Amino acid sequence: MIAFIEGKVSEILENGIIISNNGIGYYVIMPSSDISSLNSGEEIKIHTHLQVSEDNLSLYGFLSKSSLDMFRLLLSVSGIGPRNAVAVLSAVPVDDLVFAIAGEDEKKLCSAPGIGPKTARRIILELKDKVDIDINESLSSGSAQNVAAIVDHGNKNDAVLALNALGYNNSDILRAMRDIEDDPDRTTEDWIKETLNRLYVL
Image 1 (cartoon, helix red, strand yellow):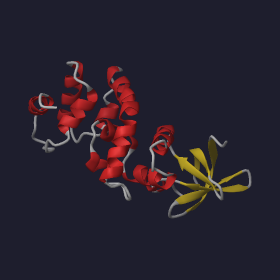
Image 2 (image 1 turned 60 degrees about the vertical axis):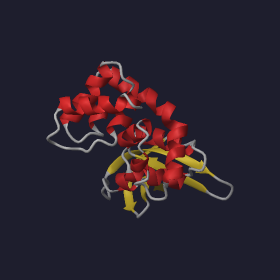
Image 3 (image 1 turned 135 degrees about the vertical axis):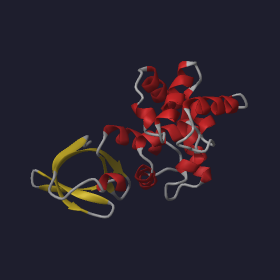
Protein backbone atom coordinates (compact mmCIF):
# COMPACT_ATOMS: atom_id res chain seq x y z
CA MET A 1 0.00 0.00 0.00
CA ILE A 2 1.23 3.51 -0.81
CA ALA A 3 0.97 5.64 2.35
CA PHE A 4 2.24 8.87 0.83
CA ILE A 5 4.14 10.28 -2.14
CA GLU A 6 6.70 13.07 -2.10
CA GLY A 7 7.55 14.63 -5.43
CA LYS A 8 7.05 17.43 -7.90
CA VAL A 9 3.70 18.47 -9.35
CA SER A 10 4.18 17.61 -12.99
CA GLU A 11 0.70 18.48 -14.24
CA ILE A 12 -2.52 19.83 -12.75
CA LEU A 13 -5.69 18.29 -14.14
CA GLU A 14 -9.38 18.89 -13.55
CA ASN A 15 -9.86 16.06 -11.04
CA GLY A 16 -6.33 15.47 -9.84
CA ILE A 17 -2.65 15.89 -10.48
CA ILE A 18 0.29 14.01 -11.88
CA ILE A 19 3.11 13.91 -9.34
CA SER A 20 6.59 12.93 -10.44
CA ASN A 21 8.63 10.70 -8.13
CA ASN A 22 11.86 8.94 -9.14
CA GLY A 23 11.03 9.08 -12.82
CA ILE A 24 7.46 7.80 -12.37
CA GLY A 25 4.40 9.94 -12.88
CA TYR A 26 1.54 9.04 -10.54
CA TYR A 27 -1.97 10.18 -11.40
CA VAL A 28 -3.64 11.08 -8.13
CA ILE A 29 -7.30 12.03 -7.77
CA MET A 30 -7.70 14.86 -5.25
CA PRO A 31 -10.39 17.16 -3.82
CA SER A 32 -10.72 20.35 -5.83
CA SER A 33 -9.94 22.38 -2.71
CA ASP A 34 -6.50 20.72 -2.54
CA ILE A 35 -5.88 21.01 -6.28
CA SER A 36 -6.61 24.73 -6.28
CA SER A 37 -3.85 25.36 -3.75
CA LEU A 38 -1.14 23.70 -5.85
CA ASN A 39 1.22 25.08 -8.46
CA SER A 40 2.90 23.18 -11.25
CA GLY A 41 6.51 22.41 -10.46
CA GLU A 42 6.28 22.67 -6.68
CA GLU A 43 7.49 19.94 -4.36
CA ILE A 44 4.73 18.43 -2.22
CA LYS A 45 3.85 15.51 0.01
CA ILE A 46 0.44 13.93 -0.40
CA HIS A 47 -1.18 11.28 1.79
CA THR A 48 -2.66 8.58 -0.39
CA HIS A 49 -5.29 5.86 -0.47
CA LEU A 50 -5.18 3.10 -3.06
CA GLN A 51 -8.68 2.07 -4.09
CA VAL A 52 -8.82 -1.41 -5.58
CA SER A 53 -11.77 -2.65 -7.62
CA GLU A 54 -12.26 -5.58 -9.97
CA ASP A 55 -11.10 -3.71 -13.06
CA ASN A 56 -9.34 -0.62 -11.77
CA LEU A 57 -6.69 0.74 -9.42
CA SER A 58 -7.17 4.38 -8.41
CA LEU A 59 -4.93 6.49 -6.23
CA TYR A 60 -6.56 9.22 -4.12
CA GLY A 61 -4.47 11.92 -2.48
CA PHE A 62 -4.82 14.58 0.18
CA LEU A 63 -2.61 17.37 1.44
CA SER A 64 -3.41 16.62 5.09
CA LYS A 65 -3.61 13.39 7.08
CA SER A 66 -6.91 14.56 8.58
CA SER A 67 -8.44 14.76 5.09
CA LEU A 68 -7.30 11.22 4.35
CA ASP A 69 -8.75 10.00 7.63
CA MET A 70 -12.09 11.67 6.89
CA PHE A 71 -12.05 10.23 3.36
CA ARG A 72 -11.73 6.73 4.82
CA LEU A 73 -14.48 7.40 7.34
CA LEU A 74 -16.77 8.49 4.51
CA LEU A 75 -15.93 5.30 2.60
CA SER A 76 -17.17 3.30 5.59
CA VAL A 77 -20.67 4.76 5.09
CA SER A 78 -22.93 2.46 3.10
CA GLY A 79 -23.54 3.79 -0.39
CA ILE A 80 -20.63 6.25 -0.33
CA GLY A 81 -17.93 5.55 -2.91
CA PRO A 82 -14.58 7.24 -3.35
CA ARG A 83 -15.88 9.74 -5.91
CA ASN A 84 -18.67 10.79 -3.52
CA ALA A 85 -16.20 11.08 -0.66
CA VAL A 86 -13.90 13.31 -2.72
CA ALA A 87 -16.88 15.45 -3.75
CA VAL A 88 -17.80 15.96 -0.10
CA LEU A 89 -14.25 16.95 0.84
CA SER A 90 -14.09 19.27 -2.17
CA ALA A 91 -17.18 21.14 -0.98
CA VAL A 92 -16.75 21.05 2.80
CA PRO A 93 -13.44 21.49 4.68
CA VAL A 94 -12.60 18.72 7.14
CA ASP A 95 -13.19 20.77 10.29
CA ASP A 96 -16.53 22.00 8.98
CA LEU A 97 -17.45 18.45 8.01
CA VAL A 98 -16.68 17.07 11.47
CA PHE A 99 -18.89 19.63 13.13
CA ALA A 100 -21.62 19.31 10.51
CA ILE A 101 -21.81 15.59 11.23
CA ALA A 102 -21.68 16.02 15.00
CA GLY A 103 -24.21 18.84 14.85
CA GLU A 104 -26.47 16.88 12.45
CA ASP A 105 -26.34 19.69 9.91
CA GLU A 106 -27.84 18.02 6.84
CA LYS A 107 -27.91 21.29 4.92
CA LYS A 108 -24.14 21.62 5.14
CA LEU A 109 -23.60 18.08 3.90
CA CYS A 110 -26.06 18.58 1.04
CA SER A 111 -23.86 21.41 -0.27
CA ALA A 112 -21.63 18.68 -1.73
CA PRO A 113 -22.51 17.57 -5.28
CA GLY A 114 -24.36 14.27 -5.35
CA ILE A 115 -25.25 14.34 -1.66
CA GLY A 116 -28.99 14.56 -1.06
CA PRO A 117 -30.93 14.62 2.23
CA LYS A 118 -31.16 10.84 2.45
CA THR A 119 -27.41 10.36 1.99
CA ALA A 120 -26.66 13.23 4.37
CA ARG A 121 -28.77 11.57 7.07
CA ARG A 122 -26.95 8.28 6.49
CA ILE A 123 -23.57 9.98 6.86
CA ILE A 124 -24.67 11.58 10.12
CA LEU A 125 -26.17 8.35 11.46
CA GLU A 126 -23.13 6.21 10.70
CA LEU A 127 -20.37 8.69 11.60
CA LYS A 128 -21.79 10.85 14.40
CA ASP A 129 -20.41 8.75 17.24
CA LYS A 130 -17.03 8.42 15.57
CA VAL A 131 -16.40 12.12 14.99
CA ASP A 132 -17.86 13.24 18.33
CA ILE A 133 -14.90 11.66 20.11
CA ASP A 134 -12.51 13.90 18.19
CA ILE A 135 -14.57 17.00 18.97
CA ASN A 136 -14.61 16.27 22.69
CA GLU A 137 -10.87 15.69 22.72
CA SER A 138 -10.20 18.93 20.81
CA LEU A 139 -12.31 21.07 23.08
CA SER A 140 -11.25 19.42 26.34
CA SER A 141 -7.64 20.11 25.40
CA GLY A 142 -8.43 23.83 25.48
CA SER A 143 -7.85 24.39 21.78
CA ALA A 144 -10.31 26.74 20.07
CA GLN A 145 -8.75 26.29 16.64
CA ASN A 146 -11.08 23.55 15.43
CA VAL A 147 -14.14 25.33 16.79
CA ALA A 148 -13.10 28.59 15.16
CA ALA A 149 -13.06 26.83 11.80
CA ILE A 150 -16.85 26.55 11.81
CA VAL A 151 -17.88 29.85 13.31
CA ASP A 152 -18.04 33.26 11.71
CA HIS A 153 -16.72 35.37 14.56
CA GLY A 154 -15.28 35.20 18.06
CA ASN A 155 -18.54 35.70 19.95
CA LYS A 156 -20.03 32.48 18.65
CA ASN A 157 -16.76 30.67 19.26
CA ASP A 158 -16.65 31.97 22.84
CA ALA A 159 -20.22 30.80 23.39
CA VAL A 160 -19.38 27.28 22.20
CA LEU A 161 -16.45 27.06 24.58
CA ALA A 162 -18.45 28.53 27.48
CA LEU A 163 -21.31 26.08 27.03
CA ASN A 164 -18.87 23.22 26.69
CA ALA A 165 -17.20 24.30 29.94
CA LEU A 166 -20.63 24.19 31.62
CA GLY A 167 -20.86 20.54 30.70
CA TYR A 168 -23.09 20.61 27.65
CA ASN A 169 -22.48 18.00 24.98
CA ASN A 170 -20.64 19.42 21.98
CA SER A 171 -22.94 17.76 19.47
CA ASP A 172 -26.01 19.22 21.18
CA ILE A 173 -24.45 22.70 21.29
CA LEU A 174 -23.69 22.69 17.58
CA ARG A 175 -27.07 21.23 16.69
CA ALA A 176 -28.80 23.92 18.75
CA MET A 177 -26.77 26.67 17.08
CA ARG A 178 -27.47 25.37 13.60
CA ASP A 179 -30.69 27.36 13.09
CA ILE A 180 -29.60 30.56 14.82
CA GLU A 181 -28.98 33.27 12.25
CA ASP A 182 -25.35 34.35 12.10
CA ASP A 183 -25.20 38.01 13.04
CA PRO A 184 -21.88 39.84 13.62
CA ASP A 185 -23.64 42.07 16.16
CA ARG A 186 -24.79 39.13 18.29
CA THR A 187 -22.87 39.12 21.57
CA THR A 188 -21.47 36.08 23.32
CA GLU A 189 -24.23 36.39 25.90
CA ASP A 190 -26.85 36.46 23.13
CA TRP A 191 -25.40 33.30 21.60
CA ILE A 192 -25.40 31.53 24.96
CA LYS A 193 -28.97 32.60 25.78
CA GLU A 194 -30.44 31.56 22.42
CA THR A 195 -28.50 28.31 22.36
CA LEU A 196 -29.67 27.43 25.87
CA ASN A 197 -33.27 28.05 24.83
CA ARG A 198 -32.85 25.50 22.06
CA LEU A 199 -30.91 23.05 24.22
CA TYR A 200 -33.84 22.86 26.62
CA VAL A 201 -36.13 21.58 23.88
CA LEU A 202 -33.71 19.12 22.24
